[in-house]
Every structure is written in C-alpha cells, then in structure tokens.
Length: 226
Figure 1 (tube, rainbow, N blue to C red):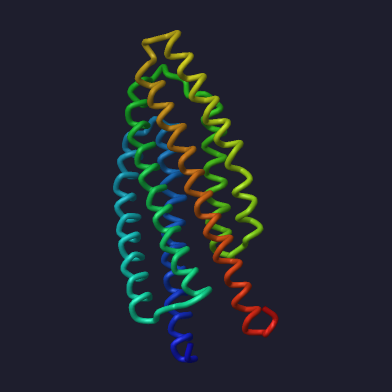
Figure 2: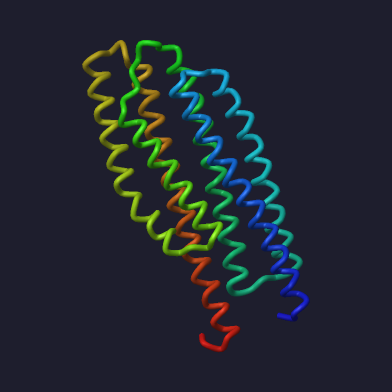
C-alpha cells in the first residue's frame, strides 16, 4: 500500500477506535446507572437509562457509517482490515450492552413497585462480575492487550454458573411463595441480562485477541521477522 494511503488508513482507524472507545465508556456508565436504579428502586434514574441508550444507538450508526467509508475509500488489507472488522463487531456488541442495560432499567421500575421484595446478595455479585468483565474487555480493546482479553474469556463459565444458580433459586422461591412471582420473574430477567452482558464482553475479548495478533504480525512483517 502506498505510504500516503497507509497514513490515511492509520488516521481513519485511530478516529474509529476513539469513537468506539467512547461508546464503550457510555456502555459501562449506562450499565452502572441501570443497576443503581435497581438497587435504589429509583424509577427516575431508570428512565434516564432509556434516554442514554439512544446516544449509544446513535454512536453505533456513526461507527457503521465510518466503517463503510473506510472500506470504500481506503480498501484496508491484512491487519488493518482485521481491525476494521473487529471494531464493527465490537460496536455491535456494545450496542447490545446498551439494550441489556435498558432491559435491566425496565425491570428495575417494576421491582421498585414491590417495596418488601428483597433482592438477593448473589445478584449484586453477578452484577459486579458482569461489570468487571465488560470493563476488562473494553480495556483490552483500548490497549490491544491479548493477554487481558484471554483472561476475560476465562471468566465466562463462572458467570454462567452463578446466573444458573440464581435463576434456579428464584424459581424455587416463586414456587413456594406465588405472591412474589412478578418481582422474582424480573429478578430472573435481570440475571439473564447480566449474563448476556458478560457474553458480549466475551465476544469483544475474542475480537481483541484476533486484532492484537494481526497487529503483531503486521509489525513483524515491517521488520522483516514474520
């Protein structure tokens, strides 16, 4: 690729990564806000989540448009193309995180109407774990850190197991006390949404591993060591 064209690709990719990192930060913030609305039984805060999700949706559209422009105007190859593909996939997963946070906020509003309903400590644990892996996946993307991304992949199974236990315990409670059916169902929805947040983090981590390894090969090729 001619030097001038490579400079343009590098510049466009840097801008695209910066936009995606901004989207990642918004997703972490909206997830935190939706959970705070749940813990505090704050319907007003939950309504803010739905507005914030629109900002994430707009960024996703902007990133889609930018990806198409890069592909059409600069025709990136090899590691650069791998990065474009990774960013497109990461943005899609982040947009889903925004949707999941909105779902949690919706459940938070309904649970807020059941003042005596006790949210189990295990849900706090699951929330902390899901937030942590999302943060780690986003940081791995920021630094193109394949090792950190691989550690994110290792955390998926324990989160799945905790979500499964929470759901089974919730079903047992609502069976024993039918009056709690509505909030228990919302608790199940939240647990599943949190597990899916972790799934999106895993998807992001997988893309980071591929993009980081492609970048290493690109640099090795430039140095004549590949």
